[in-house]
Image 1 (cartoon, protein in one colour):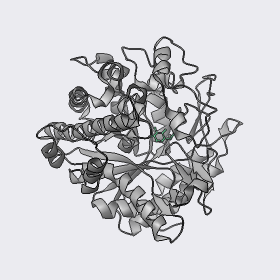
Image 2 (image 1 turned 135 degrees about the horizontal axis):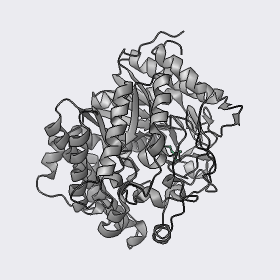
Image 3 (image 1 turned 180 degrees about the vertical axis):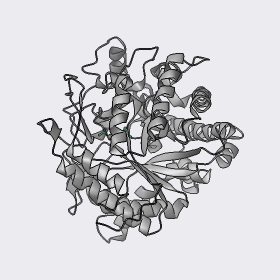
Length: 487
Ligand code: BG6
């Protein structure tokens, strides 16, 4: 037994996203989202994170002309849309206190431009949140998780267009008004810093439309500014409806270490980390940091701001900082010649002290503790780990999976969170990623399994969709029951 420093109200939970779980991509009035054109990519080099996510204009056109779900697996997901009661019952039996889900914008506003919402979409989420409330599972709801309406990409250039801010706020307003009786925790943009890693999925920018890299970069910063603004305006809207609800920003924490004590390596790592913080800095401090303004000046980047934008950013900052955490990076001035590892986030020099997952991601529990301390010391706001987990090739035998590797992974990470809390960090909760197997975001494989619950489905959509608890399910149940003392 470990001494547990987890507070009594710690939100032990799980996390999924609408586009990776719900399926039902074209029923009950739902419109197409960017996720519905994402193809199954089993053969992409795991280090090539850009290709994992890339969708070309030709692929968009092709996808719009087919109803195929086999090679567009997010279209069927794990059919959470029809099976959510069964899944919530499993989570409840596990003792889960919190579940992070997202609301598919296209279920409420199929093209994003309608003036009134689709009643079927409202009914689905109302029933979902009611059921969570009934079971004592606190909803943590992401408003934008890589699933913007495809119509806004094709007709508005995605978030580059300022009109999209108003359309998004219309969607948020409906969510707050309809769901505020059931939801007390909100997140605006999932991994807002992913704009440059996969601009199509994050801000609906199709890079091929721009004359060169420079123009695409300019467009992405413009789109990002609109998301910052939308995040602040969403906060403003929420405060009008419910003054007690909490809203947070969400970043990908990609901690970088210097490879050596060479100050040049340390400087590279610092620059990398500072860039990682830029996105949360704006949402917590309510202003662009000076280093980014200098970067814009020296690189001839002109982000168009309207009068009053800076005031809005300043006035409506977030209540807490949430983040995903999967791997850490290593920086070296000689990195061109060194062995690399990758993930769906970026490529890094290999860290000789760390093991890698089946998909080559560097596993680093201590890095989570360092990240928690760094984030808390920088922002002095409560922090929430809203994604962490290991994608693995599970073997299903005799109705279950003996996933001791997943148990070890979470045990190591939870122990570090416990120590970070002992070190004074205010951690609100931990929602493990893909608490039930779902379609992977980058390559659309379900064979990259994250869950405590196995879903009988293969990469080509064959299977019964039946659910089976894995060994880790019972292990996590015990962790929650003992509030971390069993670790
Ligand atoms: C995060 C995303 O980047 O990584 C999730 O917010 C995603 O949506 C998770 O699923 C894991 O990535 P992948 O590609 O293995 O599903």
